[in-house]
Length: 292
Image 1: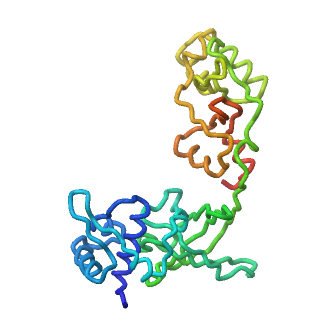
Image 2: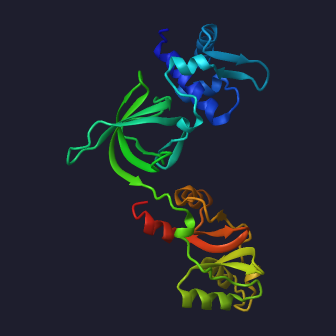
Image 3: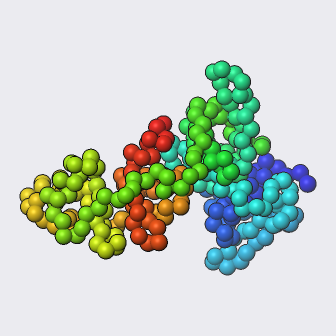
């Protein structure tokens, strides 16, 4: 069947949002993504429902679900793995859009490397000149950065000029962490912490008693204590942060990189069998990815 451009736009956005949220999608949500009037989207939904491409779900939590015919009509596979490649703009993930296909149109030119990026979702929210980051891709863990120089709304594709491609390592964080772990006890003082930080050339250490992680103390915590005129004999347990970010030793490095930005942290503790075994810092990541 021949779908109009707006019908394809709505259907692709419906499928994208449905895979992201796993519940019926309201017409208003689709309208917000594709920058269309909600009434227009509702009218088109009735037409798509009549030809069997969407199902309407009644009730307060209702909305629309794509049917199997919708995937066939758009030549999309139903495998969830095809919808997990993120696209970000200026460091912020673009909601309602994921990458389905990347086709390099130039590779041999010494100065230019261009690609066509097919989007599941709408390209309307992208503008010429946007700096975007794609990935990591599921198999090769490829991260691609580039600038949008064109877009094709008919095929829902972005045309980008790439300026960086990074192949992320697949090894788990235990290969990059600092171990054996330098730690403090809860009864150690701020003076003890300063001595360890200075002698071991580190800026923070976890507080551990009997293999139990209690918190973490950093050089910034010590500086704040001095500003508050706290005695250097104060136990580190009085100044430590108890909300410690941890990660299993077998998780891949690229999977924890986002936590550093989201939690605004400089380090996390690596654990095995619930016991702290190492520490991973921003400096460790920069050594692996100097361009990040």
